[in-house]
Amino acid sequence: MPLWQLYTPENAYTREEKADMARKITDIYSSDFTQENLGFVLPRFYTSVLFHEVKADDYYVGGESRSQFVQIEVVHIARTVATAAAKAGTSEEESLRRYFEKMEEVLKPYLADRGYEVEFHAEPAPFETWRIDFMVPPEPWSADEELWGKENKASAYGPYLTA
Image (cartoon, rainbow, N blue to C red; front, side, top):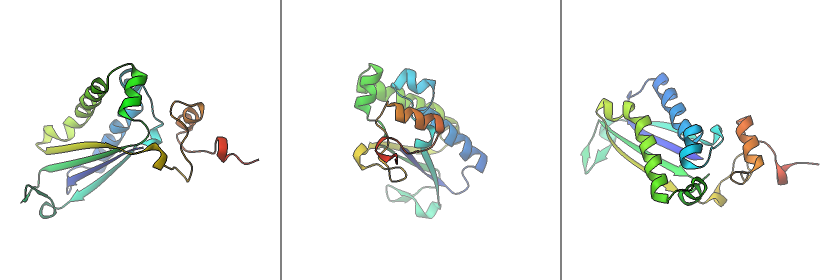
């Protein structure tokens, strides 16, 4: 899990643009860039991207209706900044700088280049509160997590294997 929720104006993106953006967002967490710069690679299915279209008269910033505003909320569970930075051998500040730089590179063509105002925030959530298909996900960097990544889906492992 990272779970991305994008609150966008109605009809801001075509179906194809949403799919392209979702692939590129997933690549932030599951690519060579991720391994080299953030110290991990997540199974691709860990990343979910939801688009919520909002009518102009349903979105207010500073008490005023905004039609050209995109709000992005991200919840991170699979990795923390601290553990990723330690694995990458960098400071937390450097890991965040790299993450935001990549995020901005990916989103710029869909946001700033189209004149949208944007607010983004990412928040951590405790790993122990997370379940996939009613299973606790494998430990980060484990062989079981690697298998989930290769299969691109959750499957029984360790305590969930039946005799």
